[in-house]
Amino acid sequence: MSIKPTIPFVGLLAAIFFAVCSVVLFFSAFATMGTQLLSAFMSSISIFALLLIDHSYMSIDFNGRVLQLSGFFKVRRMKIDINSICGYEIHQRVDEFNSLHNMLVLVLGNGKRVVFPKIAYANYLLIETFFEANIKFMGYRPLRFADFFKKWVPIVTFISGLLALLVALQKLL
Amino acid sequence: MTLGRWVGERANNILNGTAKLHPNFMNLADKNFLYANRFMSGTRTLQALKVAKVAGPIASVAGIGVSTYNIAFGKGSSWDYADIGVNAVGLGTTALVTLGLVSNPVGWVIGGGVLIYNGVRLYQSFNEGN
Image (cartoon, rainbow over all chains, first blue to last red; front, side, top):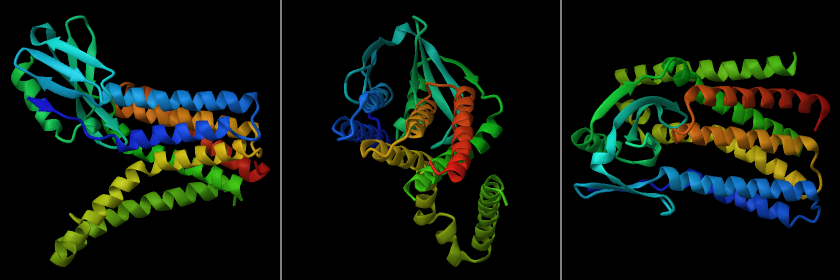
């Protein structure tokens, strides 16, 4: 069985945007120590975005005994024996893109947790079905104040972005 | 009318208007099947919702772009550095919450802080012009 992640267009565009900003600042005619530091900061964000994509958009392969997880750019690779997995949990989450939803978290024998974000997979139900059939269920963790987060997270993100845009427009005028 | 009040009223009108439009579309679709595809399952509506979801982060990115432009072309102030830093933290938090690496309450605190910063910055930039 093999499950592939979706292509993270938003994340890749963000990484490219910050890389371009970094280059523009680095080669600016008005370069100072401040702009060089900002350029380094933006390069770091770009690399961080790529690492996050690799960390979260994992391919899942299962051959009956071993669960193989490999990152989007193949930097993160994990081979997990099915017997070494303690189980899986379902966490209730709210985010900008999926609103209120359930997220699968694999709990390994050494205490580590592997998160499978919903945004990374087109067919999340397939992973749920696979976990249900092969791995022990360890519990459901509801989100406290879920309705509050569901309502306000998208509004706060939108208004915050709008205010940032208005500040930017004010600068251009 | 103060700027804060003006922004607050506009935001309130937009949110109330959106909330009213949604049931209106639903009622219209119930009464008239011709509108059903258009408002309930129409791809345009779904596309608009998808755009709305990324509108906030895109607006933040635009803000960072303008600040970067100002700094790169010698017109930047220390506020531009602060704007980039705060909005980058906001975007990073959105990404971490979406990928399940940061809990919702932590994301809420940081997101709220970024919102307050941007609100204060807008007020300040209208009054001082930077």
